[in-house]
Image 1: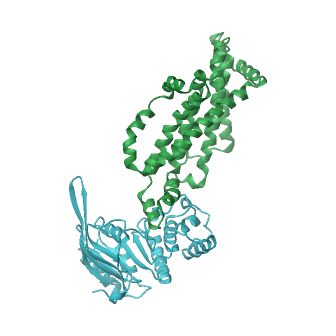
Image 2 (image 1 turned 180 degrees about the horizontal axis):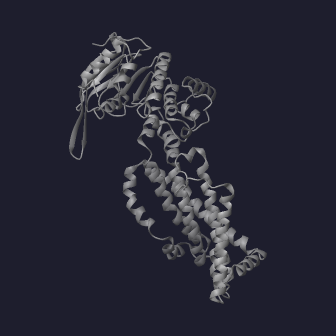
Image 3 (image 1 turned 120 degrees about the vertical axis):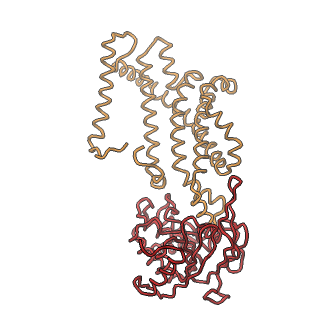
Amino acid sequence: MPSFPVEQTKLSAEHIGMVFTRDGKSTNVLSDVNLTVGRGEFLCILGPSGCGKSTLLNTMAGFLSPSSGEVRIDGEVVRSPDPRRIFVFQERGVFPWLTVEGNVGFGLFRLSRAERAQRIAHYVQLVGLEGFEKAYPAELSGGMKQRLEVARALAVNPDMLFLDEPFGALDSITRLTMRRELLRIWEAEKNTIIFVTHDIDEAVQLADRVAVMTDRPATIQQIVEIDIPHPRDMGSPRYLELRHGIFDQLGLAHKV
Amino acid sequence: MKSLVEPAKWERFVWPALACALFLALWHFLVIWSGTKVFPSPHDVEEGVAELATKSLLSRYAGDSLRRVALGYGTAIALGIPIGLTLGWYPAANRVVNPVFQMLRFISPIAWIPVSILLFGVGDTTAIFLIFLAAFFPIVVACADGVSNVPVMYRQAGRNFGLSAGRLLRRVIFPAALPQIIIGLRIALGIAWLVVVAAEMIAVDSGLGYLVIDARNSGKRYDLVVAAMLMIGIIGLALDLLFRRLKDFKSVRWGFRDGA
């Protein structure tokens, strides 16, 4: 059962199935996925590589139509992508031909020049890229590019963010910093976040709830509630307990 | 290939200058040693250039050649870019016309000369048409490939932010394809410059190509032939250098590897 009142449901996925057909062979990628996400919730979808969690995220974002079932956001069936909910790729999603400013302002073409400038300045600052406004992505580090993509997404004031293993290409130290940054931004902006990852620690550090997926055809095996307040102590007994629980869920050994 | 040691500034000028000097020296001594009566030495060519310059033929002929290239190449750009972008944008249309384009692309513009004369008579239009043909196909192919190679992720991001099709083309597809388009334009310009010489030998009575043929036909002036050849090479190099500067704009710089 969701841990939030039903009227607070932001997204619901009902009986989502996805079958890909290629060369006459069909692959069952998702089967009967059911999920509800609350308004302002931070949900992680966790599963092994290639299990179909990205497919699920693309379906929720409206880039793919499910073979069966439907995704509803605010009660409406999702049929196409929408600027109210932005998909964040790995850092490769920033536009290399635009400066930092140009990227952050990319989705703001409906605003007046003054409003746009103000919005850009705000989000450049929020993600800590002041002084790099005129820089091109090629001149930025991986972590900075990732922050730039998050800023580009946030600048259009979306009420949802879909993040597809956004920190996967970063080194482990930068990744930790980025998680802290993301939590800080989430607390300031109060968006609903759906975050796909294959990293158990990442999921336990970030999420309100973790949806653990099985291997293909993927379905949601269990939803684990992470009842530790932020900032989370990665050495606390409760943290380790939850982490171990998910390890067991995925059938992993605790020792290397 | 990039060497590990960056050459010092003086080296970047001195070594190429030395190579030029060596080339001229080799040429000079080969003329002397072979005892040729026909082929001019560098000095003869220098005098030939001076003679052409005093009659102000050089600037007029070079100007004529450049004007023809500008018209033919300009038309190829004006038509080729929109057509190429459209074909890249609609893969179904591309599949339909691609075989025809690929075939036409391999017909040397020189082979078009008779047809072109039939259509436009002997004159400027024929020369310009040949240059247009030479530049058009590489530009169309480069634009179409450039668009179809744009990563899906960029298109998705564009759609996600609610861009209309026109805006998506202008703000995402075109800038993402631009580095590849520039490469195509550069190749097309090189071909156009090769073709103008051939076209001028046949269809008109001015320009550097005409100079080559005319100097040979009227009195076997090989000093002028080689002078014209050198001018063709130098102007071609200058055009290409100009084009390479385009890559230095930061909005396209990302699309090029260093060196090239």
